[in-house]
Image 1 (cartoon, one colour):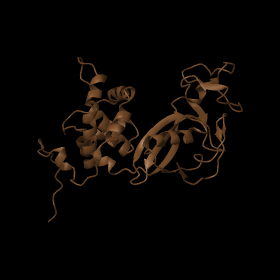
Image 2 (tube, helix red, strand yellow):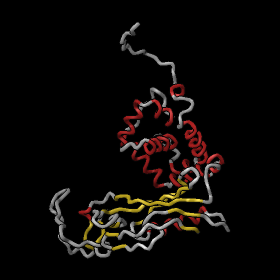
Image 3 (cartoon, one colour):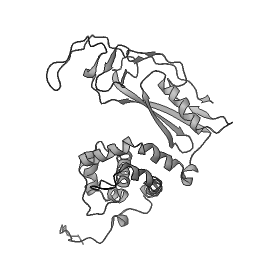
Length: 287
């Protein structure tokens, strides 16, 4: 017998978000690990907030929401708030009830900046890696390192001569500036809005961008990230960051293997004008 397409919504719901999530969902063990790490950081959270005033977004809920944004590649905080409004799985992971109001995207971003300034991300990752259930998954013999360019928020229009001798942009909030044919180098130019950003390209024929370099160290047993690092963009930054990160995870008196890609273990040369020559691919190195 065919069922009728009735769309009468009930006034009350007696099913919680917890009951909606399958018992074997992969987010369940992750939620347990996250909650244990957040308990360790409770004292650090207390130091970041005032004792009196208007309550902010709980830092525990904020960090869980940021994890969802990374897990599901959500492009913006506005989209994250939209999905939190109707996605019961997201509400359960963050710790929101089915009828709890969702935060404004701007308020969420402002509260996130407080955690970034307090280096909570590094402390959170350390608390996760120190858990016994996580240590059992990690290898201390074989690692892989990789790096990527992280584009800066600074515009190429802000990349001006350090002596101020170049032509200023046109009038207006976002004035035009013609820099075609102009040779711009990190030695002679710098961004006026983000001086730490450097001009770099990933290879010959590729466009140059103002960027930083992000580095990741992974263990090879389960492919889990054990350390991250952010440095200025340079031709040797990837190799230097790899050696710096592996020293913290290498047991004393033991040799470990580190697998890398091009520009990591070979002798790459870097052009200060933003172009990096493509070196040969090298095998894994043993340290």
